[in-house]
Length: 311
Image (cartoon, rainbow, N blue to C red):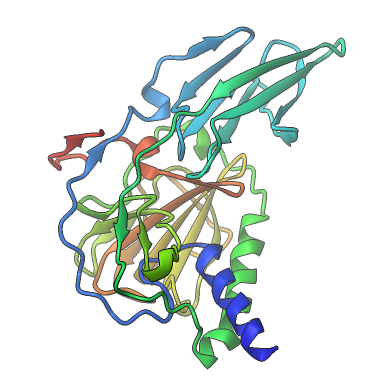
């Protein structure tokens, strides 16, 4: 029973937030430079795509984010049957996980009780998959990992449950730091016997320790760890409103506090190498509810970094 319980805790830890090195794996050599792919333009810069009485801005693609405008007179909006909050001007946020299926249904209920339903086509992505057929997967947690990780997961989940009313979701997002992207969102390793590791839930930016880290959009700090978490290291989470939040990981120092309102471009932390990493870098994750989002699709091309076109 104890072995089974340890196995489950290891799997939960791997899927809870994502990190840059899997628990139990021996330290790997620093990753080779990755040619960064240019995504479709981020949501705020894209023209609205009219779909009947709805309109959307953004990327209808796995890992994509949409800013929608509901039909006039809409009282409620839902995505696949789950209600979505709508701002007084009719705007709302939805997003598609890395493994989202080919379609999603958006429904608005109007004042007179009539409903408007639209089916969205979610385009698939080609992910960076590394097949390491000679290596086994080692998810078995160390004793201290098993002891400490559940409380960390609960802190992260409690942070995500907060509704701060932040308005950053309305803004163009910016990169919290600029540098070579060393690991892309959605990257994954397949080990011996076809065992899949957790996919990379964010984007890694290779910057030296001590690099300033900026808020990617307005928001409210919902978690500022006072000690390094086992995987994420020093972890800062910012709520941008409407269920959209950022997680900035492996920081050397955090300079804001929980509950503090921050502005887009404000200094919030410094990069580092805390947590389970092989070297200094910044990991930036974006989530809408439980959907993990590709930061490249939201923030756009990295300024000043030469990039190649997506396949």
